[in-house]
Structures are given as structure tokens and as C-alpha cells.
Image (cartoon, rainbow, N blue to C red; front, side):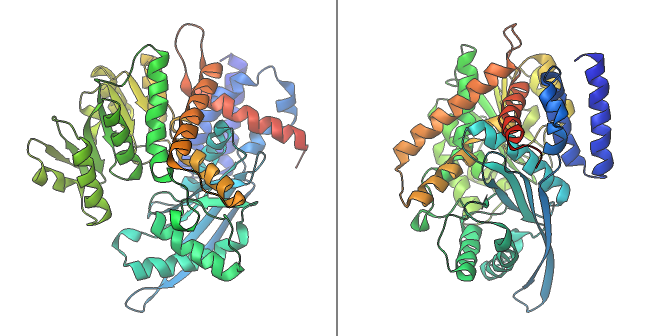
Length: 451
């Protein structure tokens, strides 16, 4: 980056920090994108004159609201809810709802900003948004979760709609929570319409949606390896997380001949040198979905496995790594350990799971590294296809959706290669994803004028 651009970037980021004090996650997300975009727009005066990047990092709106609900002991509880609608230049706002104690405005602004680029990369007409609450569903009864979801939607319904903003699930929000929110929306509005995605197939949900994010991340990984003349078959992989994304990524890796060595949750990780195959993955699904158990119980069921309390799996030697848990779970030292242990490719199943210093380690080592906005875009891509099915009142079969997901991930990979090829054989997938995602949204914003 030329010295003048570097100075401009620092000035730009200083402004972002002043306007968003204390919002570290959001500032990190903007920094990661801006350092690539400044170089790209250096000689493109139309973007400078229209202040496109400055406008893109300022959400269209941030809606904050109180959510009151009654627990099973008849106590009134109060949480905070948000919907961050970042940009709708290329389509209705689209992005998940997250229920977790860590949720705050900074986290949701970073997710909505990332979502704008991710949705752009899919090629589907979807803008970027994110929402959620600091509500924790893990220790709540079904009745408490229902009452909270109904209260949350009683406010949110004013701000969403099939042609306005179409939320989906995220951490802490699965088909159960989506069902409760959709039922409340239908009750209030007296309309059945595709206002939420991630629904059960009995009432408008799309086949392939549960698998899409994890499967898509592995398909992107396949495309990266294939581009470099390699493949997944015979390679070992470490995965963080034990939720929907992690387990479906593990499934797909097994199907393609890979050997999964680790899974984790917030308490620690398990390392199984014999491999976590399909039968073991099914056991973990039952553990997590039916018993609400912890990953530490894995070692009681399967001999030879080890549990590492309070640790993450990144120091286990493997060929491939897929962070599928949460933001900033892979730090600089973890990235160095992966590189030192011979890891050749990293594909992010979570949103921004690698810190900026960790990303720099991967880039400096010139290993294949796919950021979440590209690698985990399969989930929102199939959500976009669910929107299309709802609009047409039809349902596509598993095979058709699987083929469409494969083509979408291949297309995203090609876009990243187009803008990320440094000309010396190395593909900077972060740069490619940022520029490809930015360009489509920026050109649409130019077409609309100053709005």
C-alpha cells in the first residue's frame, strides 16, 4: 500500500474509532476490510467523491429495544434487543438473530457489516443486517424461551418483512426459536409470508438449510485445495465448536475422506486420534441437541480420546483447520502453532474467528486462508433460496439445493481468486472477498445517488 493510502487509512480508521467508542469488534471488522479497499479504490475517484466506504461503515439504522418477559417463577425479566440494518443497496436486509450473553451493539454491528459483504458475494439480492439479544436460552425452559421469543418479536415485527428485512437463526437461535418468533409474527400481522428463514420444512423452511453453512465451508475448502492441486481425501482436520456448523462441517469432511481430530465447546476441546467419524458425530448431535450435554462427556463414551479443559484445539497438529465456534477464538499464538505444525489451509465456519494478528500470521506464511465472509456464506445463500421458495410457494428437493449450494460456493471462490490473485501464485482470499463484496454494493450505491 502506498504511503499516502496508508495515511488515509489511518485517518479513516481514527474517524471510525471516534464515532464508535469502545466498539472493538466492529472496529476490527472495519479495519480488516478497509485495508484492502483503500488500495483497490486508490485510482477510482467516483468512490472517493461519493464517500462510499464512509457511508458503508455507517449502518442505515440501529434499532434498540427493551424485551420484557416472565420466567417460570413468575418473575419479570428484562433483556435488551437490537436489529442492526447495515445496508440494503442490493436487496432486503438479511442476517441472523443471535441470543447469547455476549451480544451487544458492537458485536451486532460487526456481524451486520460482515453480512453485507458476505451476502454480496453470494450473488443473490440480499442486503446486510444482524440482530439479537443478551438473553441466554441455555438454562431456560421451553416455556420461558417461547415467552421471550414472543416478546422479542412483538417489537421486532415493526422493522422486518419479506421485502424489508428477513432475519434468520444464529448462535442460540435454532428452529425452535424461529418457530416461536414466526408464530408471533403471524399472530400479530395476520400474514403468512417469508419473514424469517431457517424455519422447519413443515411450514416453509428449506431443505439443506441446517447443513448449508458447514457443508459450504468444506466445499470452499475443496475449491481452495483443488485450485492449488490438492484435495481433502487423506488429510487430517481440527474443528472448533460442536454446534450446527461444526458438526456438519465434520460430516462433509468425513464424506470426502478427511479425518476429523477435534471438536470443542466453551469449556474445552476433545482430541480423538482415531478420528471423529460419522457414528461419533451422530452421538455428539444427540449429546448436544437432546441431552444438552457438554463435549467433555465424549471421552466417557469413546476410549482413546482426550479432553483438554479450558483450551482450544489449535495446537493439535493437522493439515486443515476450521474455526466454527465464535469471533476471535483463534489468536496470534494459535495461528503460529497451526503454521508450525504444518497446517496448509484454514477455512472459517464462524464469523471473524481469527484476530487481525492471527490473519497476518496466515498471510505472512502464505498458507490458504478463507475468511468467514466467503467460506461460511453457504448458510445465508440457502437462506436466500428459502426466500425465493417462500415467495413462489414452492419447495425444492435436497438434490437440487445441494447442487445449487455447490455452484454458489464455486462461484464465490472464483470471485475471490479474481480479485485476490497477487500474480505470483498466491491467492489472498481475504483481499479477494473484501473487494468482490465491496464492488457490487458500492456500484449499487453509486447508482442510487446520495441517499
